[in-house]
Image 1 (cartoon, helix red, strand yellow):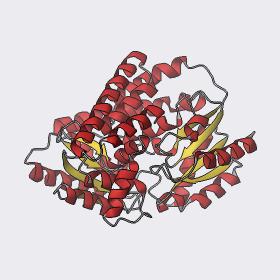
Image 2: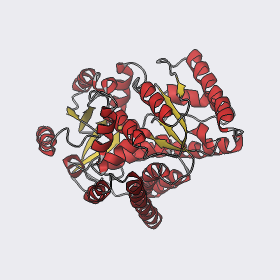
Image 3: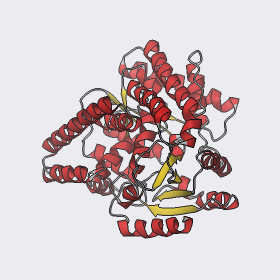
Image 4: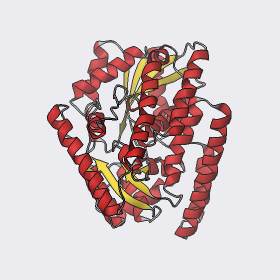
Length: 416
């Protein structure tokens, strides 16, 4: 998410016609950057540094040579812990390419296969990266259809590339006992499928250990939530993206260190008097003017991101693991109707005492963008300024920084 990333991307691009070499160079750069972030996290021992480290570790796993599971953002990754598989987000890999301005290589490859430009760029770039054979160690490809129907065809195609049978969880739109039973049955079925496909027994001890780690992570966040609302910890805009990936895809012992560090930070955090904003949906993964405007040192601070808090109230029950994982998926406030999402977003806005709300409309994401007018009306009713901002999270050529800058500055001037 910096000029250094773009510069390294140019270096990788120079060798792109030699794919094996390009992959090794990409792998080396990510490995060195992850080592640097781990050192920084251990020295600073603050929330943001640990989150940055965890987020990059997800991407790094795709190039390390160990066994991985390619998943979407809302797949219950806890299951993979029982098979010693590290989960890698296909969306996160697309974001990595965007950060280095290499996404066009993957987008072009997917489009050459016949994938429409109207398809979400996360899906096109993730698919293109696999078509380019930059990811070679996937042992499992798994996804849910939660929040995005496009996941199913894309992940099925990715599975075919790797010669695998895709694992798909069909998630109902309502949260009731029938839905919980349906999803929990599907998850147990996936475990049995994986035992057969991997010729490996499911390790319940590691599965339960993962759930216990997450129980402390989410329990600590719930405990600290009131303090965090009163005096939010400073994060750059892009670090909110890192946080949602860390919580959804790699809630491991390093993320546990992050929330423990957060506790200490909030105990000694001096009050700040910045303009506060709630960010809805995602933000661009490439370096852009939005990261400058909403840096942690700016007078304008994004204090909460909608997708980072979707599972805050999820309670973990180790005694009934598959049932509780089903409840996790189904309790996502973005899964139901628009009114449920609006109620959730309004609560975040009130809790964090925000001065404004920004919704980023990612091109190709009909699920999120289609509800913007209803969300705007909800915030208009309570007189919280709302900005709908169009753009693409992955394709850095889709909109100019000046367009973002003009819209944001006008919005900030209106707020005062």
